[in-house]
Length: 303
Ligand code: GLU
Image (cartoon, rainbow, N blue to C red; front, side, top):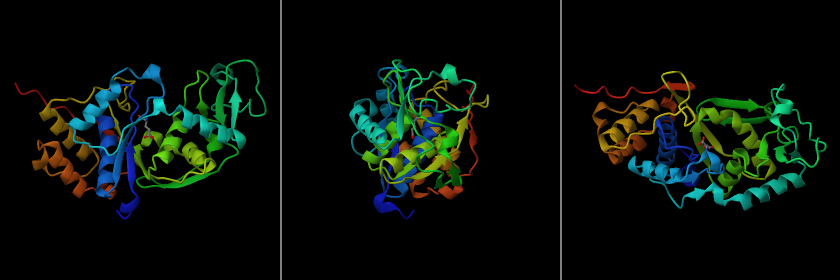
């Protein structure tokens, strides 16, 4: 690691449910990369969609991070309190002609792979509720960056479509909120699941439009369920187990899932000891750049 002086990472969970093994791997990868670089590690709660975020889940997540020894720096940021900053960013995009109101419903354009941009030159149906969309055709194109695991990436955001920045119901969309907060928190490095790799082009376009610095990216393999689905709160991935032996086991499995080859004697050691080993031995080069990882088996009940 050479970027010690200016490294600031973050873990940015959506509190739609407690952390599961897949989110532990993402949190751990981001934590280890930051600590191995001598950098800071922040936590940001991405609670911009209240209907999806049951009350108290943020606290549960912070408690889980704490139990796994993943100590963060500085104050936790809640996106639900950051609406003014997102509005200011949206207004700057509107002033540049890079955001426009859209009255179309998904049903109207369902025959198209992406939203065809019908409202770009004026609302199709004035008077109806509006969302705000990004002019993906007018910003930085293509967006090219080097992912630290998956290598050179090149996407044309216009082929991905005019992503929503603010929804019709007034809620902020992830793409805008994440870009504004990463910039305002002076994040230098994003380490997260590879499911967000193809969101990065929109984020790169927004960073350029808003005059924010570019970030370094490390996308991590996703943990798949035994049915071959990405572990997610939507498909009811089981929450992490919280009993001390289970914490030690899951942490060891997460270090192993990141291909760091922890020595067998580390299994069962307290989190602080496992993390100290993992920080000292963190090598991104060890991670196989495959998109998926199997879920480690739970221990068999001894009879
Ligand atoms: N909040 C997003 C999630 O939980 C992650 C955002 C990010 O790391 O950029 O999937």
